[in-house]
Image 1 (cartoon, rainbow, N blue to C red):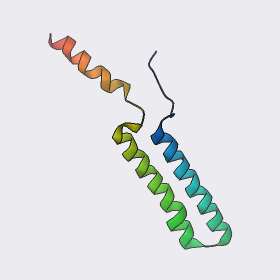
Image 2 (image 1 turned 135 degrees about the vertical axis):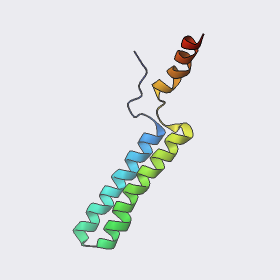
Image 3 (image 1 turned 90 degrees about the horizontal axis):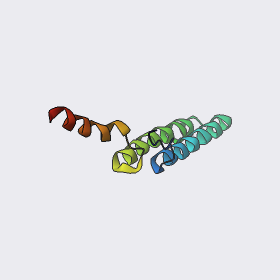
Length: 80
C-alpha cells in the first residue's frame, strides 16, 4: 500500500488556516456591510492562501507525488 499523508503537511495546514481566516473575515465583513473589507480582506486572503500553499508545495513542504518516484525505476527496467 502506498504511503499517503492525507493532507497532513505544512503546506496543507497553512493553506487551510489562511483560507479559513479569509472566510471568517469575509463573513464578518458581510455582517458589517463593509464591501472593501470583504473583497480585499476576505477574498484576497483566500487567494493568497491558495498561492502560499502552492508555493510551499513546490518548495517540498507538501505531499510527495508517488508516481514521480516510480517513473525513473520503470524507465530503467524497460531500457535495459
